[in-house]
Image (cartoon, rainbow over all chains, first blue to last red; front, side, top):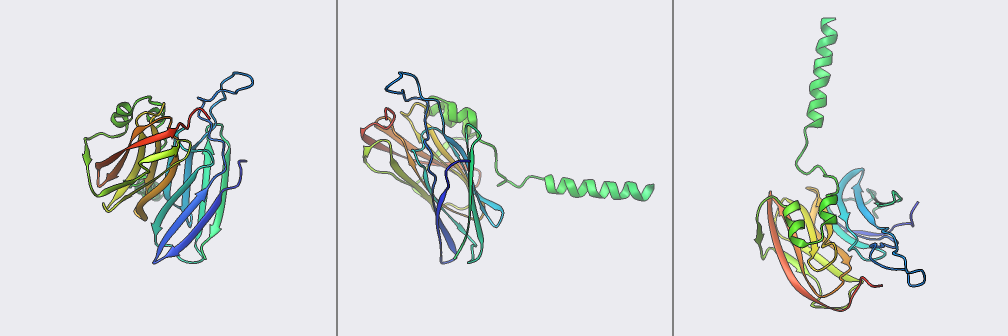
Length: 104
Length: 148
């Protein structure tokens, strides 16, 4: 299980504004370990799924070019207080993390 | 017997209706485009018709990035029926950074933070109503983000 996802979400004029922070090394496979001289293997999030009350509203596919500890923001219509928002990711090693919040 | 068969046919039709794919149903990750080492290959892999330069696509990214390890980018658009938004950094070892798939519920705006190894053209491609709209910007990087 990967590190917990942090989510900030608010509803403004019927539009949900969501910001998420996902602690993750996002190793590109290009870097070399300074001590051993060996390449650090790729380790990065490939897919992020965002669900509103169980329905996918946004899906992100990522490459190695997304920064360490990724941040993403997106918006969608039709969210009400009490609705659920779930964000999950899966990385290239098969590791996952999932977080659910309730809109205020 | 006959009734059973009718029920079976009916349930098969119902299943077919469920399986009929709405256009916004989410695709799987385009691994080949993410592994491609130049922007032209990414673009020809992902987009099956010519890209249209559009002032309805806003690419917000700094002119000068002091730290190439963290370059904030926001893409927003007034276009309707937005299906996806991609970010491409031409001079990165693998130029395709991100591809966001949106649903009819989405507002056409996404943000993410990218790594940039060196100064480069940054492009975004917005798929809306089956067409591809693009905007690009040159970003100067002071300290690269790939050496760590």
